[in-house]
Length: 374
Image (tube, rainbow, N blue to C red):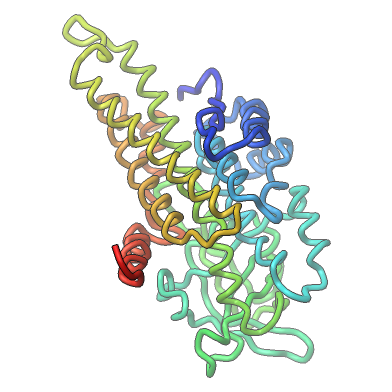
């Protein structure tokens, strides 16, 4: 498995949207993450590396540009480390935003230090894109709550200390009854089933049989907290895609400069140069869209259309870049264990989670339909 000699300092090329603090963070991460192998799937070891890099501090009350810088760096070295990092934020952001949650500061301190690993449990077998269709329910049991239901495709399953679970505390209110709950990994009535995937990540299915839960915030706040969480972190999905695409491009440049075909280096072939031009342009366009959206979010703007554009274009472009990398590697590109082969499997879920490409198109198109004038 090849590994880069140095990790790029991603923030240097984005002067319009990033400042000196982001460039300093990018340089720090380039050093702290050095040596992580893309094929290392030991979750405990990766969590420890993230703790040593003080990365989890970035997900507590996050600044979106800093999140994007971190996820681009993590996507480059280890998509699995990136996934663990992102879900640490998804599983804790709502805790900081919920009103009146007594254990807020205690839990967020543990999240920041890495003593607590989080998971975000929203998706159900029949409620993915259509969040309001969830069937999980919560009921009071004295001064406590209990949840009955099922969640699927839950990242950090099996390594998390808690699951931020969304369930309907008053089904008669429809989606207005959806609320957020904290479920301990050790809660009686909770069982976790590993879900085999095309990539080796800690992903699972949660079965909850009236397991004990702790209300986060108030009844009925769930949809606001869930969608607010996704709104903060969706832009960073595009940043992770940029990191993976950049890694694929770097691996490809190394390969085509070494490979000789018909008496010439592969990089000197015109068709190769044309493909490299497409890959590089896709990557730069993606980064511009991602950091524009992150810049607007950090200014407090809603920026739903810009975020959707960034997420849609960056993940689709990364798929194209990585597919081209596989093609230019030839047989090595489909050999199990090569970096580009792994990236080919790693990039595919990004076009689905936190809002599919099709949903992003609806958001963008809907903005035009709702606006007046040209």
